[in-house]
Length: 235
Image (cartoon, rainbow, N blue to C red):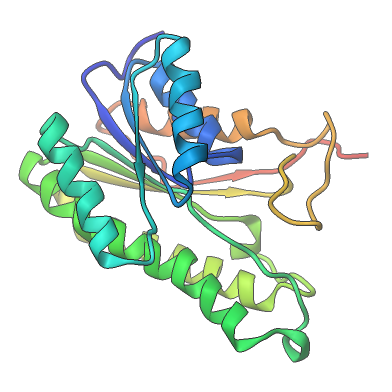
C-alpha cells in the first residue's frame, strides 16, 4: 500500500534498529526518506540497501546535537525536495547506571541527544510545516518516559521530559494542521542496551515502525497523540 507518495520524511537515528525500520516502513508506503545519523558509512549502507529494493532514500550524515548540522540537514532536504511532511525524532541514547555511579558526562550526553537534539531538529523543521499548514512530528520515547526504572534515572528523566515537550508542542501547532505524536515502546529486540529483552516474543523494530505508519496515515482530521507498545507475553 503506497499511501505516502509525494511525502518527504526525515528520520533521525536511521542507521540501525528502530530508526532503520521506521525509515523502511515509510519508504515502502511511497515516501522519500532522508536518513540522518552520525555514521556516514552505516547510513550509506542503509541507503544502498533501500535503493536495491526500489525505495527512495538519501543519506545525510547528521549529529543532532549540533545546530549547524541540523540546519544543514533541513536546508538540504528543502533544497532537494521542497518540503518536509514527516519528522521522526528517533535518535537517542541510554546509559543505565545508579545515580551514584553515573558520570556527569554520561548524564549530559543523554540530555544532549534525547532532548536537545529533538528540540533542534523540531525547531528547524517547524517553519516549513507551518508554512505548508501540514505535517506530522513523531517522537520515539520509551515506556521509561512513563514509569520509574531502577538504574535508569538519567535516561528516564530525558524521556519524561520528551513527553512534556511533545504534548506541549501539540497544543502549540495543532491549529496549523500539524500533528504531534509520541510513541512509547517497552522492550524491543535491539542492541540499544543490555537491559533489553531479546527474542521473537519481544516487540520487534518493525512493530514500532508499523505503529508510526498507522499514526501518520490516519485521516488528517484525527491525531493519535500517544501510543504505548509492549510485548504481549514476553515469557
